[in-house]
Image 1 (spheres, rainbow, N blue to C red):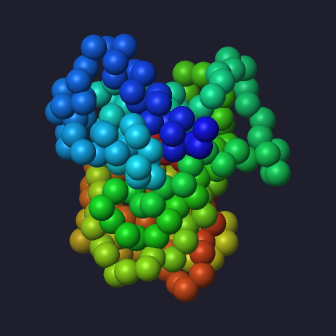
Image 2 (image 1 turned 120 degrees about the horizontal axis):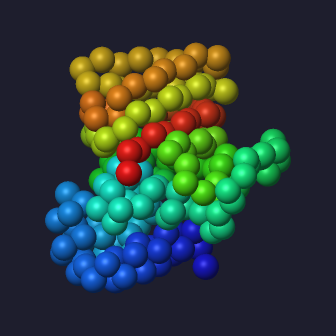
Length: 192
C-alpha cells in the first residue's frame, strides 16, 4: 500500500470510528468535502495544511497519520535511516510551489508534539504564490541549496546554514529559491 493510501485509510478509519460523514469532517476541518474524499481515496498527494486541519478535527496529532508504529522511548534516526513518509505536492492542494519530499526523523515516537522532517524541496513548475496558513509553528534550517519563504507580505531567501522560525498562522509558502532542489531540516509544531 502506498504512503498516500495509508494516510487516506487512516483518515477514513478515524472518521468512521468517530461516526463522522465526509461532510461533517470537512466542516470540522474547515476544508471542502472533495479534499477529504481525494485524500481518503489517495487521488491526490497529501498536503500539509489540510492534513493538519483534519488531524485537529479528528482529535489526533499529525504523526498519527504518518506513522506505522509507536515507541514510548527516544527515537534515534541514523543518517541513512530517515523514513520517506510522504510526497507532498505543496503546502496546499491547489498550489504548485514545487514538490516536497518528506522524510520523518521521529517516525514511531508516541505522543510527540513536534514533527521533525528532512524535506527535499523541488523547484516549482509555475510561479504560483498561493500562501497557506495553519495553527502552530515551524522551524526550517537549510542544509543544501537555497530556500525562499514568502511570509505575510515579506519574502526571505535562505542559503545553506541559514534558518527561520515562524508562526504558521501567518500565510506562508516555502519553495526552492533556484533552479535546483533545496534540502532542509524542518520541525513543525501543530497543537492538538
